[in-house]
Length: 161
Image (cartoon, rainbow, N blue to C red; front, top):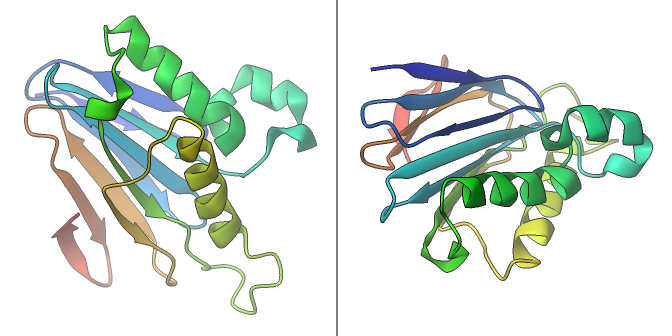
């Protein structure tokens, strides 16, 4: 079993049975997890901000840092593994918390969630399930063999979405 760690603004993909694709400490960031049951292909991106126009150079370097460039990059990456029928994908999202902004002045978590959903809708897709908002940090594991998405937080423990 191999664990693929996905950092902020990064992507992790695997079709190797037994692998786990994992991202740590999602606060206001959003994890987008996709799974093809047919291909046993798992993908995860760690989105930090909603829109790339604020830093086009970073969007070129790390497209998954932004929702508007990360979602297309994710689907293009899945296509390289032979995943061309997106309607077969199981999509889940997690994160979008308001940990460092309790008065919600910037509300980055909510804006990230909305941007992720907006960009999924462009493909006529949406999340099957989600665990978003609140004030907790989440770690996400996506199992390649099963497509299970397991979340954990120090204050809560583990749960599945």
